[in-house]
Image 1 (tube, rainbow, N blue to C red):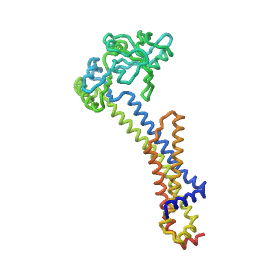
Image 2 (image 1 turned 90 degrees about the horizontal axis):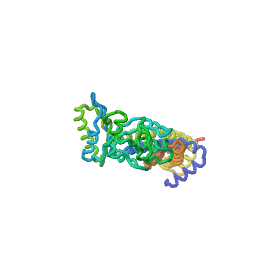
Image 3 (image 1 turned 60 degrees about the horizontal axis):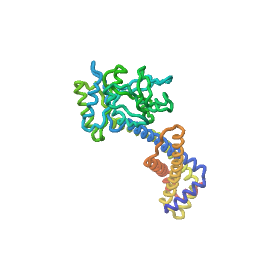
Image 4 (image 1 turned 120 degrees about the vertical axis):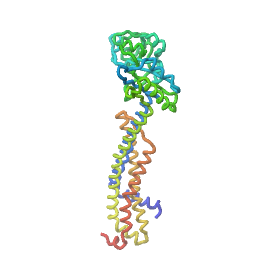
Length: 390
């Protein structure tokens, strides 16, 4: 039997029982659409996490000082000295404190970051107006502030705040800059912030020393070497007490986050794949019914010269056609479901070509795996017994 002829016969048989064929396909349709939607959500989450981690800065090391004994911080000079490590592009020591910022009758409680000029480049900020913290501000402990977009809007509305004065925990600061809007992530809002010189922050919040440092490498190739050198310096400062500090490599964080997201996608895909197996059982069940209903037809075909292989191929093609059509309908439903989820829940849904091909391929494989037994049963029927079947 030729493949084209077998396909025509399969389509004719499917169209002869439209409702039954559709109900048979339903398990495959649900399975494929579930795989497309759930894995798309998982991959969208993975892409979103990667984007958010990279938004923190690229080629980044984060140093947190936990302290040992009475020594719980580094001096500003010790912190900025990490910029001398070969391959380091920026080094930004910073301290973060929650504080009330007030302008007129308006006030807001936000995160106030004391840092240096490198923080602007390292964190990927832009300026909407004015300037950022400069070295002269740190040298002379200037009471100047740079406002995040959301903070400025809450205090000043849509007016330009540059040149105005705000009070941070009761201390008067001149606004010298306005950051461009950056958005938010799972790590919090980048726009609800006030940035002041680190040396000024020490005096304002009565907290001497640096507790955290961002170090950015010029290239990812130098990141591991810079981490080793930074850890060696910290070990020397804290006399080998490794629990006195922590150094986090952003690439390691990214790999961990991606690994978790990939595992989630795999788990979601596996759960959805169960529907495909259920659909395969439905195909096998209906094909067994079809063999029983068409027993006399099989006997007649064998009587006029059809071989066992011809009968086997005919029923196998029919099973595969049902599963393939179900897969295509499921693909369309999956795209529609992904669009609906993305629109209604405001989450990213990413469809990859590999996953689409895998879902369709698996649906066809289901047709082969669950269609082989009914097809083989039909092929093994004896012409005489088949013709006698009532």
